[in-house]
Length: 564
Image (tube, rainbow, N blue to C red):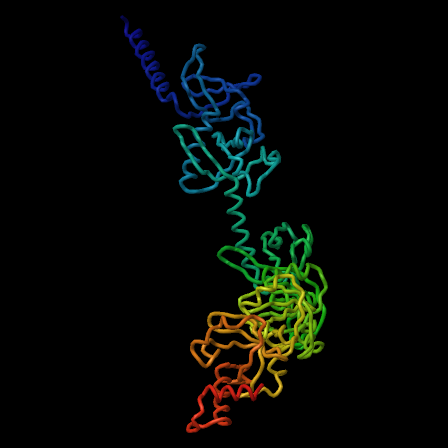
């Protein structure tokens, strides 16, 4: 072999070796730089080095957030080399995969540093949306789109905007992002700046954004404040819509600012004069005036005396006679009532009112029209163990005690003769207005037998009519009086064998001697035995003596004959 041929072979071998090394620098499965050498219809021909070219669709160079500059020959681009050669001898390359690889590296760094990333919402999928993060595709849940639910997301699509990465899984190729977190952070920053410029006591204009049951939210120029229903007016406000409307511009006063939570409390009534100032002078105790019932509770009713001023009628001050009744059965909402001022407390902002005080006390009225001794008529309302309750005029009740039912019989026995609903007559015995008591008596209508007993006295002999015969004695009534008493068995005769109650018959009249008469204690006792002893003594004194020799039978016989 000639020397020239040997040199040529060595040069070819060196060139081939260099080419081999050059090819080995281009590794499959990595991102490489290439140059656009041609653009054919919808593809770009890119030289990735080592005399290797590949084709990439032009659409991979365009799309949301990728710029509007068209690709041209000579541009340098980065592509992902999947294989050096395919069946056609071309390199298999991809711009999308290159961009995705680049993005994952950047996104992982941003995720670790908790930094925002830019992306573009480009499609809607089940449960949310897909976001292009410069080549990497992320999932945006529907709940993470905005602070408040968004019905139409189309204005947000195709527009580059910041996102926060919530979750990354490179092995599975999953990325979850949030736009809501970015908005909340931005909003918190804005709120901090706005709150720093506000002061308690400051008066500011705001726009009503939302109304709830407990108040209204007012936009103060980027930050919301709560206007509570109790701070809308000095008067009672049942619902915030009575005072404000959505979209209305209102002048409010900043009551309190919480710099930690950025909560702002607002008030409208604080801009108005306090109606409680000098309240005691305008509403003196005892004054009678009219008001409107605004609210009814279990314990009473609230009455508006003027805008911003309400007083409470406690249930105990509603009626003189209706006890333990719900206030709603006495007054109704919006009813105009006449009340009396009972107490005013400016510090506690309380006014106690009385409804019954505006009416005459029914016990006072009864005492004026029914003096003691007058006779009334009413229905038996109730029977108790201590007497009867009689219903009288103006819904007041009078009580007949057991001791005032009958002069002679015990009340426990007499009360059984009355039943609920009976109409009875009674005499007024006493009226205690302060204790709200009326004492009545039924027996007093029949007269007091002791008062009508005349000059009855101890030692007097009276004639009695037997009313009843019992084993222990007889019950009698003194003739020509209404006085009744009981003669005990031992007082029925002088001789023991004659002390038998059965000797007497009902309706029989007998004589007896008064052994005690106490008009004050209302007691009278009679004795047949005492009468016989007295008569015996009288006969002895008149017809004989101890030494006359006459027998007791002769003396008594003579005495009885003389009496007849």
